Image 1 (cartoon, rainbow, N blue to C red):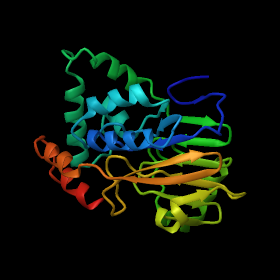
Image 2: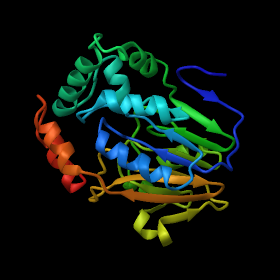
Image 3: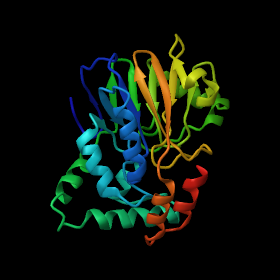
Length: 262
């Protein structure tokens, strides 16, 4: 069954997949990540949403996801571009309106294809006992799950009650693994940045390609194969992206934050 909200395919969890999220129109970062992916023998790419927003190249990033992603989910910035940026701060809202203007250039022969692509993005995806969302298992589009939420017993109980074995998510731009015993593991806490799933359920935040917020400006994504999850950090030309954002009618903070990973 396929719909805007959900689909499930009979797929194998044993393929070697790259799970990426929160590209945010950062073409330089996405290109660097795709090159790294190509060097790792990846068989499929799954994107957890927010292809657009904040950054200077929504068209280029959408085109690459149409070409390369086996599955691409709807993120809150993708939805805001299609409809309205409700609840967004001023800077994020400015970027959404600018993004919409770029995509509404119907002199571009790919304009309709891009809108069609965004318009049918599903909110979630399932491969056996693995759940893929942008936000959280409870609210695939908008709910944030922060590392300090491990102390919110009720929230964790509800979220892990939905997860069968493991969920992959983004949205906060902070990579790390929540485990059912109420721990949060940053990639730096893992030997060789690798985590092997156990009998404990896990929620895996894959980090952000285009706007990391864990104090590390390098792009972040994960490789998933069987029960093994490995974080990858990839350098890209941050200054080039910053200079491109400075030329846009948006808040300069959207560029400044990139160099600090915040």
